[in-house]
Image 1 (cartoon, rainbow, N blue to C red):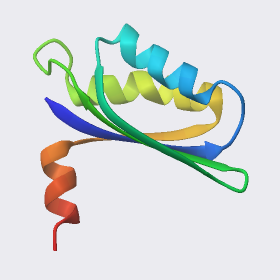
Image 2 (image 1 turned 180 degrees about the vertical axis):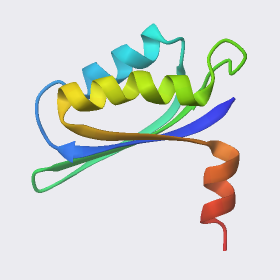
Image 3 (image 1 turned 180 degrees about the horizontal axis):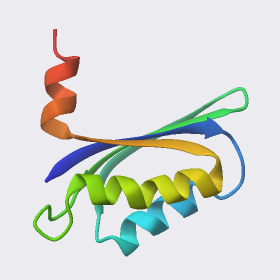
Length: 89
């Protein structure tokens, strides 16, 4: 399954490491990534791929919520198909 992950929150050391390490531990492959800082706010968007038969998107979201809580971030995961449909004009 292809998915889009957004990560937002106040900038601090270790955000990228925490998020990407958790994704690697969950066998999620990062296909593309974009990140930016706006003043003190960090934003990252990742396009990822993972085996939905091994782990569904809701389970992955719960695991990433743990990272979000620990790092004071908001991490959202959407299927790429849903993300594309919602963002098309």
